[in-house]
Amino acid sequence: MVITEVLQLVDKLVQKQTGKHLDDLQKAVIKGLWQGKTYSEIADECGYDSKNYIGDVSRTLFKILSEQLNEDINKSNFCWTIERVINSQFVGLFNSNVTWCNSHPQADTNQSITDEEKTTKNTGYHDLTLAPKITHFYDRTLELQTLSHWLTTQNPRLISVLGLSGIGKTTLVKQFVDLNIQQFDVVVWKSLKLSQSLDGILTEILTGINTELIQSDNKLTQFFNLLRQQRCLIILDDVQELFITGEFAGQFKPEHKNYQNLLAMVRDIEHQSTLILITQEQCQEMICLDAELYPINCLELGRLDHIDIVKDYGLKDKESWQRLIDLYEGNPVYLKDIASLIKNVFGGKVAEFLREDSLIITKDMKSRFTELFNRISPIERVIILQLSKFDRPVLREDLRQSLSLSSMDFMNGLQSLSQRYLLKRIEGEKVLFDLSVVVQVYVRTCCQDL
Image 1 (cartoon, rainbow, N blue to C red):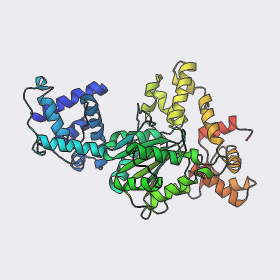
Image 2 (spheres, rainbow, N blue to C red):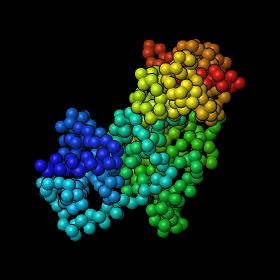
Image 3 (cartoon, rainbow, N blue to C red):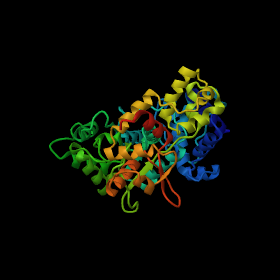
Image 4 (tube, helix red, strand yellow):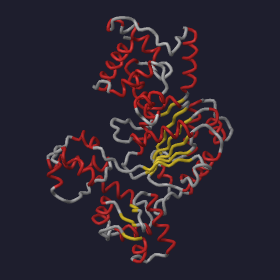
């Protein structure tokens, strides 16, 4: 049976790359692709509500096959490539040659050359020099589906991915890029920790695509021509580096006001591209007041809960891992730091560490929090120090009465802390405010001189 032979080949390649055999969903996806079905049809047969998840599974398989076979494999050429491979390089592994599946007409040689030239043209320009390599990706399936849905059905011009340091913002976006890079003509990843010059970034993008592109014309004009003419995905990481420290969240430094203009133009000018901003702070340009009027989406990342996020750290007492995750609020970076301490001090015994019955702020956590707290305004410091003195969530009115702040400063301070994801807001009959346990312990033990 032809599909059996196809599954055998794909399984061998996947097992060689990952050490694991195809699971049931991957087998169903391979069968569906071979039969020429759409992602929606495969999703319906497999009982999934979203075709985007099936697309993600497919693209992961395409990436593995591309690396194993040393050629670019995608949905449009999957069947033809597998047929060619089985009939040539792997002919000895199977009982017979594979017949081309009826749903996909076989192209002639001249057409193949044309398609290859088209692919080369559409591949365009990919600059991921500053993008991190993702070795582990855990429990962000819903967020990944959300990004895929936005970018495949809504075509938003501006997306912000927001959350505390270490929560996994960069990892999520890079995972999306790895799975979907073929959807874009131009993909560029820039880290604003390394360089904040907008002029320099635009120059690198434009000259990277075409060394003759920049003459004397306005770079912004050329950049927006690019966004209109090609489908571009531009990622700016660590956008908080553009904001003023010691002031309320999301205020651009005077020397970076040109980014403020850029974001407004990206939002308002008609084009087919998307700019993704990864940041610990939200600014006004990222806030979507009316999703129907403004093509903006904000994705706020919260905690991770899956025990797999600590499984590679060599810890013992697996039955205690979830308690450890809860204690450190599912933040992957906090958990990595504390896992190192548990291995060095407790011999990897999580249960023994938990018997200490206290939340430990490691030196690396303290360094990260200190960097974050150096960014906040004096008014925010007063609010957060006062909040840390409460042992329970507190009403806004009670918090207000315990502080010597004007109503305007108090309200702006609360909003700014929320834009930095340092406040926990508990909705109910009345709104309550609290700090996360980790932030509270840091403030109580390390910030008494605030």
